[in-house]
Image (cartoon, rainbow, N blue to C red; front, side, top):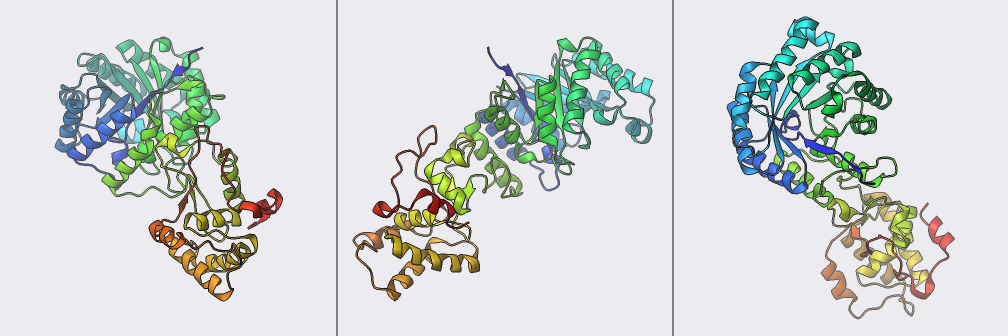
Length: 445
């Protein structure tokens, strides 16, 4: 049976850009939009045209430069917003007007100062006007997760009747939790007349760190579009991370029998481009695309990785565009990884010699955190100078040339692996002095 298709709506250029420090000029937006096209997203929300002349120009430029995906422009539920957004989208092959209006009582009373009845009328009138400019109209009830459910159902029914083609349910302040949000999506499908004729979308913020989990709960509940951003950038604590949602759907098909059109090998290049444009670095332990996402320092982990990558990796780094996994030499590293790096630098040790190198390595790693190649080479030279070389301890020949050629390329890469990323056939780094699996496993604990 064919998997249901999930539409990926990227709002890095709009909601993501609202993150402090992440604003982009026209040229930067066009550059990132072209990369999002290569990534394979279905919808690019290019901006909020009423916000500024620069945002208007950016939406125009993206609409003209990127013909394949749907190009969306955000507009409040007001005539002048909609007219300006429609003008900005004139060059788009597949334009979408995205209309929003707050529906929670706290917003209606304190921000908009309108009644519930006025809210329903304004939402429906705005969608009806938007349909005169575009066949593809999305409506978002801002702060939907803090809106009284019965009233939310009434608003959604009204905008469906007015011509909305996508209903986006925003968790604007990151307030909901997965079980609650999934239930809301299921209730919409059961309670709102005509909802079977539109696409249900989810737009989750990360204030409680649940944006991705809430988005996946929405998908499980029946949403077929997810709004997200590269690197999870966005207002306050950010939006749901595109790369995390896409890879969760890809890795856990047993729980999520859905597919996307995203070319996952472009995830890391896209993340790197956004980091370069905004100057906002990705946190090292960020899932999927952080620099530590495929890095291993613990000795037990390194030993497992060298035997079979499946022991500690649930996806290949290459599947998301990362060149390879890394073994980082630090105080938690084991002898297996240390021996491999020595061999890559041109030094082959018997067990007794390796034991001495390892003891000195642990002392050094306790002091300097990460041991780079130049540290390791000096340690090897000093250790070998203190104890005369035993037969087979060091193979001189080309060792010096290999070590020089290696430079200071720490952390080290793992040996290449076949497609199923099993490290079968990887020869022992200890040669005839291979340790028992148990001893090697415990080393460095």
